[in-house]
Image (tube, rainbow, N blue to C red; front, top):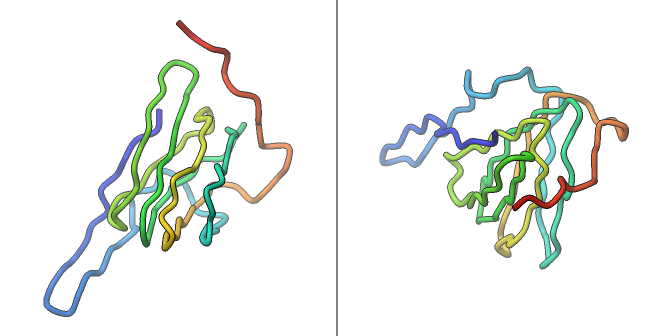
Length: 124
């Protein structure tokens, strides 16, 4: 199930320094970031193998998640919050603020065949 992780942040009069160390449950093979998003909904998939760590390093956005059993919506609005998405987590990204920059760390290199676009069946 997707879950939030608090990233260690050091703050003093000079500002903030947030560290991503020993908190993602995988070796990082790919990093990308999403920005300049209009009112579109991004994502709409899950993976066969890839685990992801999402950090909104500026602004805010919402991540809807469905793992086949439960659904949940996460708001990322602090660069010290990291959302871990497991392969089974079908997700969408939406409601990006105008200044949002969402950074994604991935456990696998991009492979088209790793993506599953079909939603889970409706549940009662």
